[in-house]
Length: 109
Length: 116
Image 1 (cartoon, each protein chain N blue to C red):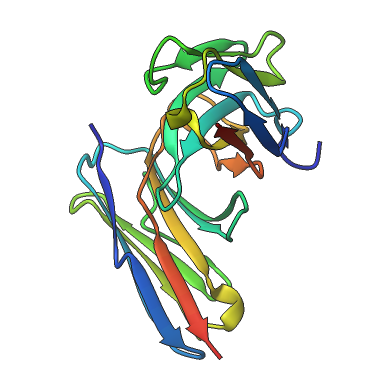
Image 2: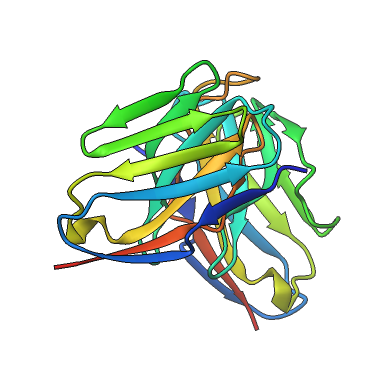
C-alpha cells in the first residue's frame, strides 16, 4: 500500500524567504504526482501536476520536482508572501491518488 | 459547471440516521472521486468512478458506505446507519482524463458531516 509522508509537518518563515517542502512515497510505480494548497475550512486547490514522464513543473513562484527512483518530490516556493500561508498537500498514484498529511506553512509579514 | 459543486456544505445528523451527499463534477469530466478528510489529516481515498461505473471502491470503509453515478455526471455518496466516527469532511474531485493517464484533479469545497 502506498504511504505518503510530508516533512516538515509545520513550517514558519519570514516573508521573502525561499522554502522547500518535501514529499516522499514508498511505491515508485506512480503515474502522477500533484501538489495542492488547502486554506482552512476550504477544499483543495491544484497547484502543479507532474506526470510520470516529467521531472518538474513550474508555475509562477512555484517549482515542483519529481524523482520517482528515490520516491521523492519537492515543492519550492520562491520569495514567500503572507498569502502563501496554507496547508500544502501532495498526492501520488494514478486513479486512486494517495495523500500525505500535509505541511502547514505560515509566512510572517 | 465552472467548478466541482458539493451539497450540502454542512450536514448535522444523529447517530443511526441515513445521509446522502451530492457531487456535481466539472462538465465533461469523465472521472469522479470521493475522499474523506479528518481534522489534521490528508484526504483518504474512498471510491473512483469512470463514467457510470465504480472502477475502484477499495477505499470504502465498510458496507454502510455506497456511492452511485447513474448517468455518468452527478454522484451521490450514501451513508447508512451513521456513526460518530463518520464525522469528517467529504471531498469530491473530478478529472478530464481516465485510465492510467489520470489528469489533474479538481476538488469541490467539501461537505462537512457531523454525527451527534
